[in-house]
Amino acid sequence: MTLKFPFSLGRTLKAQKKLRGLVEKVARQSWPLVKPAKAKKKPAQPQFVERISFGSNPGRLKMKIHVPPRLARNSPLVVVLHGCLQTPESFDAGSGFSALADRRRFALLYPQQSRSNNANLCFNWFRPSAVARDRGELMSIKQMIDSAISDHHLDGSRVYIAGLSAGGAMACALAATYPEMFAGVAIFAGLPFGAARDAVSALSLMQKGVEKSAQSWGDLVRLASPGPTLWPPLSIWQGSNDRTVHPANAEAMLSQWLDVTGLGRSAEVARKMPWGTVTRWRAGGRDRISYYRLDSFGHGIPIGEGGRAGVKARRDRFMLPAGVSAPRELMKLWGL
Image 1 (spheres, rainbow, N blue to C red):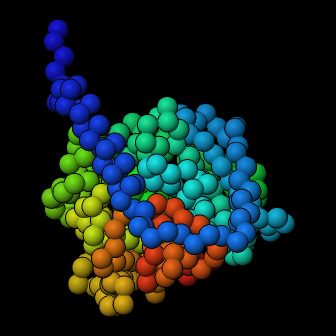
Image 2 (image 1 turned 60 degrees about the vertical axis):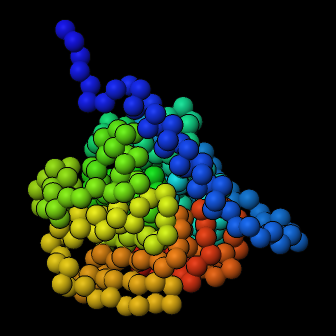
């Protein structure tokens, strides 16, 4: 018997190599050319604790958590998914989420990818086995959330998740497969759920996007979560100058989630800001979908003017100065 594959092994390996090269290229280009000012005092390291036992962990991920001292029972949980070439420590140093956790009183969970899973530390958002409900990396992240809620007596109705790039695609996948778990979702430079099935299609999607009807995009989510579902409020963030994840992917995600939630594009309320445009779709007296389009912005998370997130933050290659601070904006959106 002869086995036939849709793509040759050589083509797949070539695509994986290109994908890695694209990630490394943007990492080099993301650093500012100016010399950073010398810090007078080295900032304190966030106190992350790595949990070894939190479930069967089919995705072979690491769990790192920051719980502020004397955190009250029934406090919220914020989950952050890093991008390629990042770790929880590097992401947090640039975004300042742990400082916000201490100030706003919530627990902070960072799932971490391993190099044995992905050489660039990307979450494997393009592998069907990694993004299916109760399987792979998604199941590992769900187990981390369940463990954190149980161990620290957190409020399971106030779980929020944010992700950048590959982490953004995984946040989108978690919203599609476990919508009941989240009270809010934020996707930065992410990709629509179900759009890629291997490294070849992932590379094509990142570079130019894929055209589908809104219903076709929505069907991919409905297939993952059939039946009546209450979808979490969702915000999509995209830079107009992103050379790693084409802005067409943000438009595709928008079409996907507008179709799933039944919100029409005609119901939008757009507001021009100095840094870009924010468009909102409301239902039931609250924002259900928000789209932040940042003018002249590249691949990363906007952390305010001067590279600050409203807290003391250090450089990270994907934490970029902008006229809006996403971490601070998320605190408002999520009521934290």
